[in-house]
Structure formats: structure tokens, C-alpha cells
Image (cartoon, rainbow, N blue to C red; front, side, top):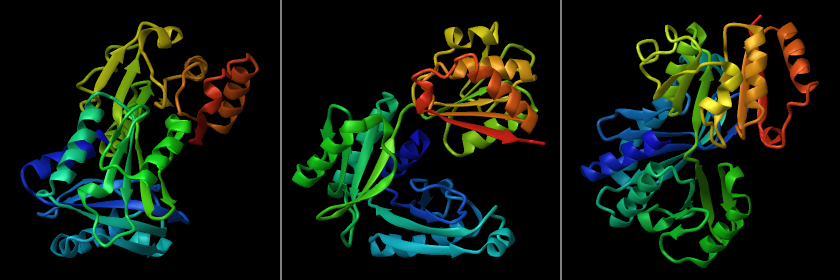
Length: 321
């Protein structure tokens, strides 16, 4: 998300209006989740992705009208599996997209976006609150809430929303809040980092994909000939660790991070999983066969490696054969 914020601020600073396309609702097998955002510049270029193919093409088609009218549009898209395949998307489904106009001459808009960039640079978690139940969304229709601070025009309803959000601030998910008005609630967690453990050929492909969707990507391995910037040019950090048993001591993994385990052996994967379950990661994924899943997970949990912090994580396993 930092890349998206930086791109929005850069365009607005140079007095170029932009359109953002945000998935606000999803059903069926649509490829991206609610909260996924893409920015469309006046020249038609984009930053980010909301699923590719026909969906993005249709949003880009609407963008000139949004820029001309200076009003936002809530647009529904329905894409069958056959349509999706024909247009290069993986799957179909139904999505509702908010197409929002951002005015480069709107001082309030500039102020709130600059605040978002500042907080992002400081790695401070925050939530963007946007009132969408009106004909035009302006800077005064946006607020930022952190665990301690509040930025934007004073508004009693929005302040009450912020107080409610702080009750479980680190677990907020993108959603629409409906009260007297309708608000879009967008969490921006500074710790949206992906830690790829293992630096083989599968890791190279994951690193390229993670960079394209906006993750801060960290790759680690115990072999210097594999873990280097030449093999992972898109990764923000590449670490050579002395031992996977010392993973947590050598690399700090903050809360709400994502961990993907793709090392060179089953035995190492189990050691890494044991380390990962002692973190506060929100997602832990590992690749392998069904038999590996059974032996590795059973070996891990039977030894009592499910810690209090790990119970809040999503544990995923991808069966490759």
C-alpha cells in the first residue's frame, strides 16, 4: 500500500488528477479481495492491480468520464468464468468497484494524502475513513485514525467510528460502515511485509509477484549463493542467515506480517514452521505434497509449537502434487 500512497501523492503534487478504483464488495470467485485498490492516471497508466484483464480494462474505460465529471461512481461488474478466461483473468465472479476522483487542486485532499504518506513512512498503522454517500468525494470527506490520533474535519459520527475501531485496532478489515452516512473503512498496516523463507526458483517467482501487488518483500536463506540481490532484484531485503533454527533471533518479524515457507527440504520446512509459529504473523503458508502436510504439521503441533501469538494467524498449505 505504501507504493500506492506514494504514487497518489506524487501525481497530486504535480497537479495531475487521478482516479482510484477500489473493490468494495466481492462475491463468487473474483480474483481479488475487497479493499484492493488501483490508481489510474490521466494518461491511462496505472499503479497496482484489482485483478487484471477485463475488470481493469473496464475501470480504465470509465476513468475519463470520472475525471471529466469529478464525481465518484459505484460500478458493478459481473464476469463469467468463460469471459474471464477469454480476457486473461484466472476466474470470474461479481465485484462492486468504487471509482473515485482525486482532485489535485483540493487542498484538503492534498493534506490528508500527505498525512497518509507521512504515517506510512513512519511505519505507523492507520485507518482511512471516507464518506461515500454523497455525489462528490472531496478531501473534507476523508479522515485518518491511528491508535492515538485523529486527523480531518471534526465530525461526531466519524469520531464515534474511530473510537469503535480502536477497540480492535490491529485486526480491522476493509468494510463499509453504514450509519447516518456510508463510510469506506480502509486499514493501512505498515507491517504488510512478506517474508519468503528459502531462496530457490519458486521463491524467485513469489518475490516478483509480491512486489507487483505492493508487499515489502524480504527473502532469506542460509546459502549466500542463493540469497543475493542478483537473484532477487525486486526484493527490498535479502538476508543470509546462519541457521534456520536461529531464524527469529537473526531476523525480526513484526506483527501482521506474512510468512511463506519454501525451503529446499521437508526437514527444514518443519524447523522454519516451528519458528514461524512463535511469531505474531497474520499468515503462514507452506508448499508441499499431501503426505508432507500430514507429517510436517502433525510433527509440529504434537510438539506444542502452537503459541498464543500464532493462534491468531492464518495457516495455509499448498499441495503441489
